[in-house]
Amino acid sequence: MDYLHLLYWVFFFPQALRWYVDKFGGGYIPKDEMNWRKGWELLRQNAIQHQLLFQGLVLTVITSLAIDLIF
Image (cartoon, rainbow, N blue to C red; front, side):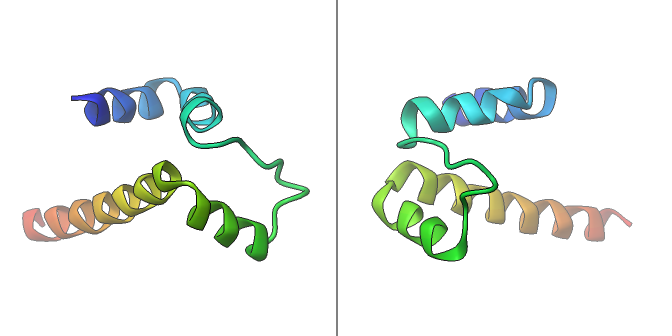
């Protein structure tokens, strides 16, 4: 249920994703300071952000397949 609640927040209150990452994911790196090395290190160290990325990718693939099957 928490993931559905988070998904609701992301669609209707996009700032909630940044708040979630700040509170549970180990912090937010500003866009001008982010690079590939810092991104991979952050994903490797923080399981929550790793899971959030995985869920986003799975949701994108499943949504794409569902829309493809509908049409």
